[in-house]
Amino acid sequence: MRATRLHDCPAPAKLNLFLHVNGRRADGYHLLQTVFQMVDHGDLLHFDLRADERIVRTTDVPGVPEQGDLIVRALLLLQAACKRRHGRLPPGIDVAIDKRLPMGGGLGGGSSDAATALMAANALWEAGFSREELMALALPLGADIPFFIFGQTAFAEGVGEALQPVDAPDCWYLVIEPGVAVPTAAIFCSEHLTRGTEPVRIADFSRHTMNRTDSTGFGRNDLQAVAVSLFPPVAQAIDWLSAHGDARMTGSGACVFCAFSSEAEADAVLQQVPGIWEAWKAKALKHHPLNTVLQVSAVIE
Image (tube, rainbow, N blue to C red; front, side):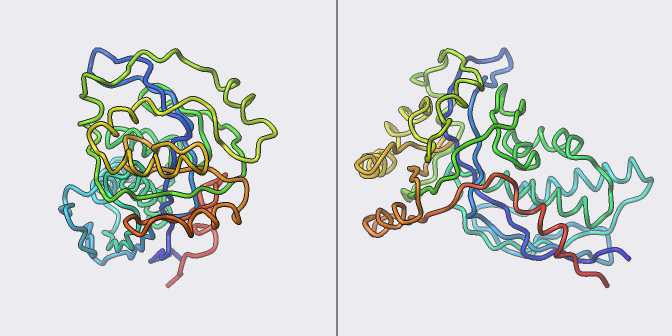
């Protein structure tokens, strides 16, 4: 019998342990190199099959209209792909969201939500799409979505879609939310953005992190200089956290993180974070936690 609902599906945040801009393609997209690291903090999504064929977001998300939501758009794409493959539309889905990740934070919240939706619906609909097929389907919606479907720490190139598994230290992170939303376009369109960083190799990152207990010290975030000039709260958070380690921005901002070798070290700094900011700790994840949920949490009716 088919599962009719999947609840408590995690959509974890990601951190960019470094982010280099190596060039720009003729179509305007930037060529990047980064290491994506998932952490055990994020949104939770809940899916219930419907009696009709509608995709319905049952939770209001301020600033994100339902039809513009990546979750809804991703599910509509997969539903159409199911019809092409199986000759009929699968049933609709109600989606509820426990939103914890800030928008414009560089944590990949919307992309992670969309990836979780695709993986959960693929299971609920018994659609049979492979991981690679889901990644290809998701790429036009956003370059970060394939990483979450890829489901493990990854060295990424191209526009972020060329992924290779890579090991990273099993550490803890402290993340500060500076309280501003940074629009990605404003960073990538800046005339001050450095676009000529020399490419590195995956072996360079692996050699640097070998035998380390945290992920600090490799490369930089090329987007950070632009973000701190445009958004002073990001600069203030980096300045404060830099007193405790190698603090840097994730993605195009605004969130700032620092790696620690133990939970106790992260806790000690977390207790000192000024009250003007939201802050939290999270453990590095080697694999996407949804894989476990899909194995054990389907409710059969």
